[in-house]
Image (tube, rainbow, N blue to C red; front, top):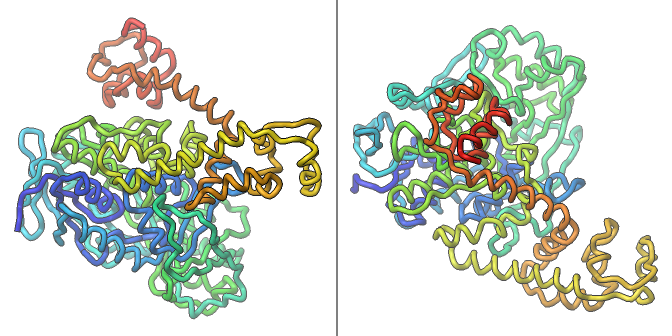
Length: 624
């Protein structure tokens, strides 16, 4: 048994799994410590991955050589591309997963990753010497030494669950909370706060009247999460179902509000604004007569269903009474009620962009400990923390993603620059360069960086190069190939498109909103022959080429804006000012700049409360 490691990862949720894999695959001797090896990468809430902006994060994790996309594809029981009615910058993949298979797949990956070891225990103390982390001590009183530690404790730090007036200590249902670390970190000067999240009731599908629900089927085209070679989804695909609440449901919920921990003063912490409990919905939207709910299967064969949209901490009898007023649930039976959970988090402005803490060297935080919510946000942070922990052990330049490179870059910059006052969830609206950060080109943006880092392997890099060459070949062909009006007008009129008055380049037809490459291929034999030369991943390559053609103007314009802003990113200001003595800027600006100590002028400009005039003064002081 070894007791010394390069990297120790505490917690085997989505952040911890990605962190441990990344550090180990890069060559660090890594130990992953978890309460329960049978609940590795547990989907403690919704059994789904992806969604608006979250799906883009998973594609980025995969492009960087992470595992979440691979695991999701292998365990998917339904896949959909959301926001298809909007432009490709908004397209977001989402997948229902088999909860048990998801855990099995992750555990198999972890147990077969070289340099990665697992220990089942809880961490109660960090070893810190002269401002630097040296290892951990566990509940079993085992001491493990290391050069870096990554904390990914999720909702376990002083976790407390609420069901009505009943309070149960724990990080998840039937899992113990973690004690000691929050108090120790507080003693080192860390700012700690409390947040709240919740999860819905789990329903026995045998008690549901499915004929009174609306079926929502999945999609079976080429889209998936991982950019690796396509294989058909191995599991049986299943439908989701929608139902609606009604006024009878709302009346019961209103009567129960005095028993709600959210409204009787029992819960003081802040919950996620964009994933509210059902009781919060009826209070916030009192005039709304119904709310949509999604009944989602938990696995390929199980009868357990997750009721998305019905998070609650109300007493069990009130949850049940309200559910039975929905026609499809009039005979409902449940496996367990919904509950809320409070837990500790740490102000993420106490971190560098590498996710290393500012107060203790070589200590990293990732996931809900930083005030985020969601598996995808956690996994993205875990990947970056794992990479940078390896670099801290073995040398190299810190690995940081810019806001114009990845949603993961937006996420981390938002956290360390702005902090959080509620659980942080990623949205496309948070990214100012979302046309550059599409889900279809995450590999084009990130895989080469990951390959040079050593995280993306040669096979993945070869796939990227082949795809990139094939996309450029189609674009070059479309740009150079001329079409005579007389040879195509009949075909255009048959599909209801205005005929040409004169010959054009093929690319001029592709950019028309009514046309696409697949529609034009039967009309232009040379284009069909070009497409037929693509022997693998044809649909993915054609879609990527078409998006680049149709949106080239928008993409180029956004890249120009990003490049201008990047000039401010190159003006380093960390440790160059005594902000509290700069009297020309506001008191608020002095306090926030001193607390965050931004790396660059651009980061300083993104801090809430910092005005353009404050930035101009800093530029003047820099001699600019």
